[in-house]
Image 1 (cartoon, rainbow, N blue to C red):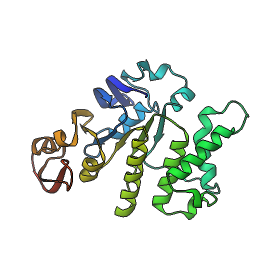
Image 2: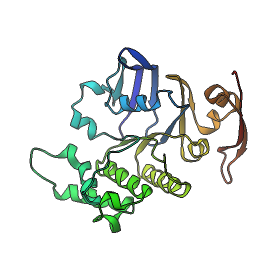
Image 3: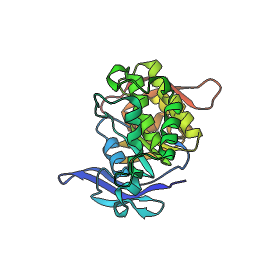
Length: 262
């Protein structure tokens, strides 16, 4: 299973550092969620981990090797990444879009092999899209479209799946649908790293949490270790009240108040 970690990682845009000196090891085979205020550098951090952005300082490592020294297709065979907003592709069917996940394995104009089709069929089945595979993307609901992008990433057949806000703009039912799907995928042996705003979803569906603010990694740990009054006060300037989720020892944020001037 692929190991992903960073050492003294700093990332910037035009000389402005957005993420500063982060050293972290992403737990293998678990769901790790990145939480923190808007503008904390979470999306920027994920882009560096997926080799979309080059570090200003430090490095990202895949299995001990600097990601910047690895061939692009080789990276894409280990890490699949979904951005906050995937570009709309008009005119293509669900199956055709999912097939794009096999691109990192194509050589020249060789086309799709039997193994590629097997993985595409598996990805469609895992995301419950078999009945929709001949429909075009623009005929689907928001939740269905999100499942298509996840299916494309699954077809890429990587150990690591990175998602930037996978449930943004979805209604509560579709949010749960996507998170339960990711949990199922994780149980099949995938490492998942995602950003998420809903604290209770983060607690319920994550094994591990990273708390970021102003480009700094403030803390990391299990939901039980991270969801404390002091930590959420430092991260969000809120005073939170907690309970425990039913049939679980994971914390539940019942309510919170803004702490002004903190």
